[in-house]
Length: 433
Ligand SMILES: Cc1cc2nc3c(=O)[nH]c(=O)nc-3n(C[C@H](O)[C@H](O)[C@H](O)COP(=O)(O)OP(=O)(O)OC[C@H]3O[C@@H](n4cnc5c(N)ncnc54)[C@H](O)[C@@H]3O)c2cc1C
Image 1 (cartoon, rainbow, N blue to C red):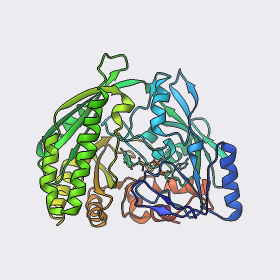
Image 2 (cartoon, rainbow, N blue to C red):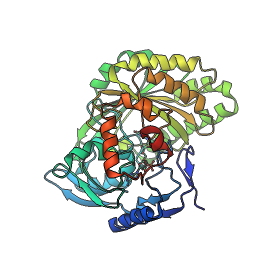
Image 3 (cartoon, rainbow, N blue to C red):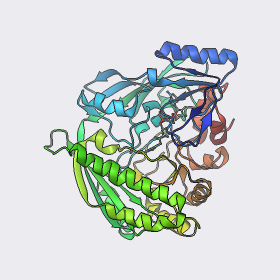
């Protein structure tokens, strides 16, 4: 029997079989065969969701066989991409055509379809999440039909299928609105917690891509601002040793030491965290957008993340800090703060709302439930919307009021998947049966 597990080791399942199609026709055949047998079907990307959104005890479709650029329209800067394409492949592929994704999250291991289906986002006051960059999608619906949705064919479905939680069909092709390839100048500086929070609005609106990390039990945050530069801007590429020291030694290895020792002796977490913040200094470097947006994440963790109204961030983060201080157990993983522009996708955490994001993490060997549960309860009081791929405790009943178009999405689900070929327990919880 095959056992599937996600990256965070927080979800697993035992599919009856795993299909590895290498063509769209094969995907159609897999869905039709499952329908004949009365089985459910689930596509899986990189398994980087922390929730069990990709878990299935039916047929699991691994889409690594559907990768690559299928077409490039230089005039409109739109590209057709096979849905299983990994983001780390996509950056260099687009660069060959002088193009880039407009914005990205902080890693690039995900598949394009998996990332967009859960609302993966980066940071930037003026920049929306990945799914907002999609202009068309082709998917296999519950009846095994191939459906293309774009600006001239069924455009009313676009706000649903661009970010469909895997509930509407198996995406086989996506069209992405790209931008000209660009560089990013990254600038990292430590800063007092209060200053970063008090000047949240100023820093976010004054930078293309601003974010910061706060290590619980310390007074310091690490800020990161990325500035967009034309691709031909002269710059020095950091050496391999320098990159290793910064990305691996100072980030991953320092983090591994804090979470590992903190797990063994929890009382060590606050002094270790304070020590860890001291290894961070000022640094600046410039590189291709996809290299700077994404960093390696080698320490396995679990995560919960909520979108809240942008202006609520200072009050909400102070509340999170109080919650952590009163929690009773030290927290060894940093809290991450980002922002995003509103978008039109119905199930986007930034749907029709300028948003701030607060993400909390726990080492995967720690029990995350009590911490995430308190965080979840707190975020509800700030009109929070949970990331679909990150751990939360919400249900369809209490999510409906958080999304203006929740019922519109359910209507599309009824049309494209009336027999619930693509359902699983997670979708039943957040969308209903
Ligand atoms: C280390 C780490 C860092 C992360 N950083 C960020 C970040 O910076 N920003 C952020 O927003 N999120 C982040 N995430 C969350 C991650 O981006 C999302 O959970 C994303 O969905 C993972 O993509 P995936 O390819 O692994 O999809 P999976 O987890 O495999 O699948 C996610 C969903 O997409 C569906 N799906 C996959 N392929 C298809 C398809 N072809 N057709 C239809 N449905 C499909 C699945 O069925 C499932 O419902 C991070 C996660 C990790 C582990």
